[in-house]
Length: 185
Ligand code: ZN
Image 1 (cartoon, rainbow, N blue to C red):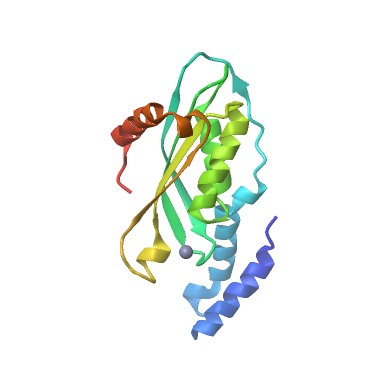
Image 2 (tube, rainbow, N blue to C red):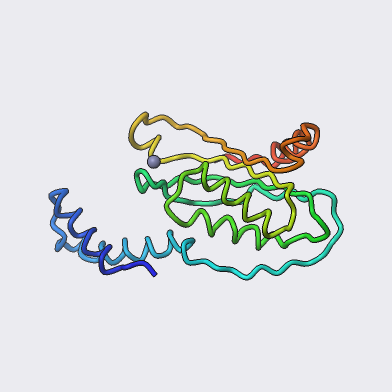
């Protein structure tokens, strides 16, 4: 588990370094609140879910958009958006809630979007027992919008495995589903 006492001390130091008074009323509970918040936002490190698989017949499963929130590891600022996933089942179809859990497991830790996309694809391969997996992540990064270039930007990353890499017709079919479901970020 994360060391909340250490986070509290660190946040208090940051408040002092900024020139704030950590004892003033509005800030007194802030180190505790931030420690609780990080415990929640970074719980992905400690998730070890048991996945239950069940069998159902389907040629292609397409899921999304699934909302996620993460923290960039370079600035500790949020990036958030949607994950879209597709796979070709090999005899078993997994519940949507399992896929959502995989996404949260990798979103709720310090991340970069590219790695998160790869990790979700890899875990979906394990979960579904299928090599043929496609994951697309579209997100907005607060470290690009609030600081640095200060421009609203949508970052899209994709992981293509197996048939989704080889078969361009299959890929465009899935992309049309995703386009239909595309959400405002
Ligand atoms: Zn960043």
